[in-house]
Image 1 (cartoon, rainbow, N blue to C red):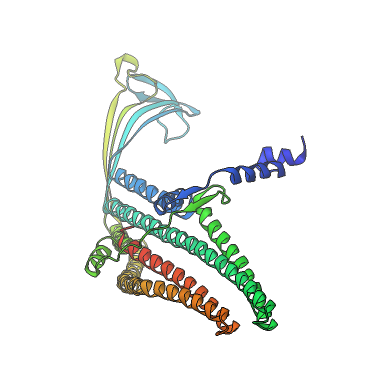
Image 2: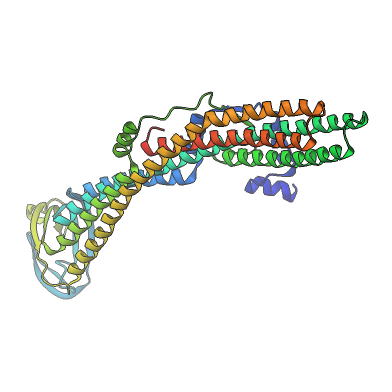
Length: 446
């Protein structure tokens, strides 16, 4: 086996043959027709930042369950066998047992000691409640951050989707312009042949044709780049052949009142900021809880005896239980609790400022996006009319040139105006679709 084949087998590195086969398979397969909804769905399954945000949201939800479990008693089944070296003396072991060797360690009760116990512990304090409140707020914030990531991804997909359509439309325009320039070179050549035009007209038309060929190459490259940028989000192999389904008519802009209501009701940035404030409040409460005592409860049932048995010598019962209540009252910690409370309050003040900034940003974005969408919508009809007018102007100018009433520069100028008008129409459509997508993303209607 060759080194290239071995590398392909072990590490998944494509060999030249496999790459060629994949390219042939991609080329031979029928192009997929991708709608905007399908593009968004595919991107959500492939984009790593959104996947990380979604995973963080799920993990934060589990943190909430973990914090809730901290309020409940914990139970363990404890088993232990302990042997201690004797010190050579005898002691009275109790439990029906006479004298037996004394252990060298005074903390141990016998040379051999067995424990098999069920232990239930519960700690009651304000810190556990504050931790649960913090986990609840963190879960809400993580969910809002995941929604922010989703909407950001949707906005990116929409922009790339319509940018690719616009690039394809501009490629069509560039092809038409190149064909128009070639046709005009033929026209000037024929007129020169019958001595109706100067050779300078042929040269000028040839220069324009060369420029249009360069523009066509640039447009083709831009269209390929736009397709690849979108394909990175949609397919495992960005070279996958696909076509985009362009919308027949652009969607209408909703009413201003409806947009404001939806933005205020369903905005993840605002939810995230509010959840962050609740987290800070919980942190302050948790820090202040260190001033208060914690109540510890313990219940133990089982054996702790020199024999691993329910009953010892002379039928003495080894099974039994013990219960304890512990109250730890904080007295002095060198002001560390006070400083922790101050820290949490300082951070909470910063979160309040961030919340206020988020509210202001929401209002500004709403006004900007709505105004942008309205302005772009109002210009669509005008841009379409300009393109049609430029096409008619070129037709008439060419007729005038054929009749000797117009110069070659007038024809070239009319060609340039038509190309610019068609490109401006595509740019206007892209601008409106992007602005509308931003508005829909802000209101959560996408």
